[in-house]
Image (tube, rainbow, N blue to C red):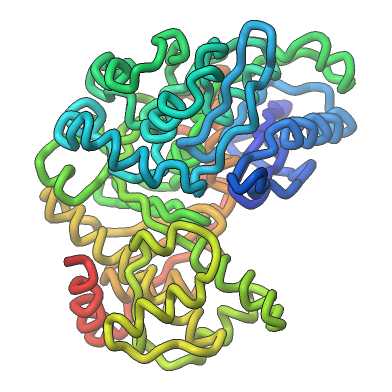
Length: 491
């Protein structure tokens, strides 16, 4: 029997972070969560920030927990959400707490930069979906309002790549993160000189870009000694968590789409080349880069965030109901009565989510959901319809039939949403693995280390290791009628 190879994934999410130990042996992978901690925004002087030093402390706590289980670690990689970033200088490891993408600072920077550069140029250079949270508009705000800080900085790094820097003292930007910033050219495979010039930032702050799966250094001897670990390689697997999650989609062939489901929903297909046709700009899709030179052609959708915020507000009002109970109540509620469009701007920011849902329904002359069950049903059905709409749009743009939708990530546990999605889209939905991001992170490291041969081998390990549940479409007629109603909200 061959001995297991152990890899560590530090998976940072918008609600929680985890340090996960993955063991690969005989074509199967097993995960063990060693440490979990809350993330979430910190409010400072009215701005939303990430308490990155605390996250780093928690990651070190997680590595101490790993050391108690094994000192035989073959590699570590960090993944995190995209768009946000941290600055550092030659002498200071952190210049200010990073902004949270839901902070309002891009309310003016987003339209301001588009007025300066033009949407067509930005799209031509990057092929990225226009969202006000994108790194491009955050950097423009820095150029306008934080010039002294930028002048001190050596580089900015995405959240995962910044933690890599702290762990091994090597500063680089991994390509999957770079491609989400809307400052990187997926065709030329480098930072866009034209956009950097329009930003007015020093070129030095844009760190060198490396391929997904690059070994970038070794755990520093200081950290290894203090945490009772032997030094091991630090890999940039896919620093953007969606890149890691999509690598772990247990798919075969070509006629499939994926949905990375969590706080955000990211729905798309895997391509070999960026898709930069006019329809991509018109429909506001994005080209993000993934492992083995793949392209994630996708749409960002405000996902279970809307339900998370609704549940939080219900608890504040005295109705503290957990997710399984809330979903059970939604299942018993009246079907397809009220719908929202999840990507409307009002749903992006925290606060008054229940009122926002109700106001949308009132504005569109629909029944107003006024119970936890009705609110949850409205949100889940609307998400399913948004997924169905995007599947249809992808087929139209690409001239490709999508035969199955693979749902991965935490949202794949929501069986009611999976059922709704299969019926709304009219195609089978498969659910799992839940731990796609950590699995992708760990198994990309295994490919980079030579323990697996390719992305195809990686996906074979996933299929060998996990049971995937399938949901077939039912009740097609009412969902088809509801989709027509939903499409009117998109016009």
